[in-house]
Length: 149
Image 1 (cartoon, one colour):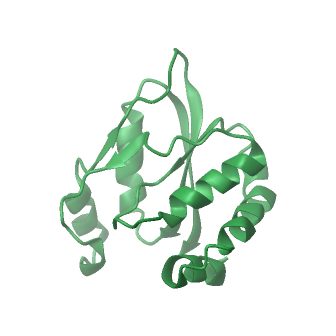
Image 2: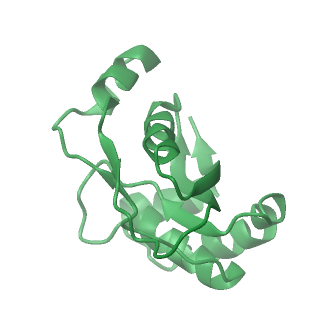
C-alpha cells in the first residue's frame, strides 16, 4: 500500500488508483459495512488531480457507496503542517479550517467514512471530524487512512 500510494502521489502513476481501490474494497470495506457515504479528506495542497479524491471515487464505485467529494471543505489558510512538530501546534493551526457543504438532499442521518492517505498525528482528521460532527445528517463518523508515519 505504501509504495503504491507513493507512486501515485509523488510519481503521478495514476494506474495505482485501481490497485489501491481494489485493496481497500478487499481489506477495508469488510470492517465498515454499515458505512453509507464516503468522503475524501480534502487535500492540503492544491493539485490538478487529487489522489485521495480519485482513490475514494474508485473505491466507492467498487463497493457501490456514494462519494461526496465536496461535502467536506478545507479553507486555505496558508499554514504548512509539515513544518510543525507537535500535535498541539497542528491542531491550533487547523482550528476552524474545515467546513461542511450540505450536498445531501432530504432528511435523515447516515454513517460516513472519511478516507485519507496518511495518518501522522491525527490532527487533520480530528479537525475534519469536528466539522462533520456539527452536520445534522451524520449518524456516525468512521475514518480510514491508507498509511501512517
